[in-house]
Length: 316
Image (cartoon, rainbow, N blue to C red):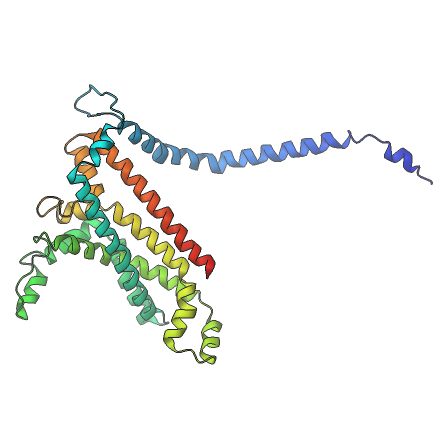
């Protein structure tokens, strides 16, 4: 049977378009339905418990809000102007910065060393992996109470030093040592997290790369420098960002161990000062300004560190 090509070409295509349109519409409705079932609840929770509190804190930071003084008024940026002339707040920024530097460097280095020692098979190494991770699963309050007893002036550590003829040290009572003692306690607790992340990174390194490096005559240090360390870049990124955020929001260790002392704010972090100002002094408008500034600092620092470390991952 002969087919007239001209007749076929002249047929209208409008009969096909509605079907395609209906198919596209069904796909859109199905996607919206899936979003409503799986995505909307998560966004709702995130909005209620993250975005809404952040927005409310920003609004309070522009007022003189005090729950025991209902005469709240809008003060604009006055709270922020006061912050950067407040010696107590500036001191807390310095304390937080020192704590952050220690907490980012020490657990990272120690965690990498421990992970390399435990990167072997056998029940002995598996047991020690669990031992190092135990502090991470303990409550920060429990860890703080235990270390407070150990580092007291008459505690176990000073008694052990006395047995070898060393005078007692004011680990928590000396203003020049208290911050470093608290930083050491926090670093000890976060060590297990870094060990686990680095172990995961070490176990993902292909054995063929080590074999090839050995055949080429690479020494152990060269194998670490050119094989292990580059492939641990994602683990370094995770540990650094987590430690950075943990240091900036440090509160419970400070509250239990030193309560911001000894002396005048020698261990008071920004998070500690914010909660003290908001819930002890009840100046919640001013405390909200502190929280907003801390949020901006943490977000900026995390974004910069994440960008730099991820760029290193790409370059490698």
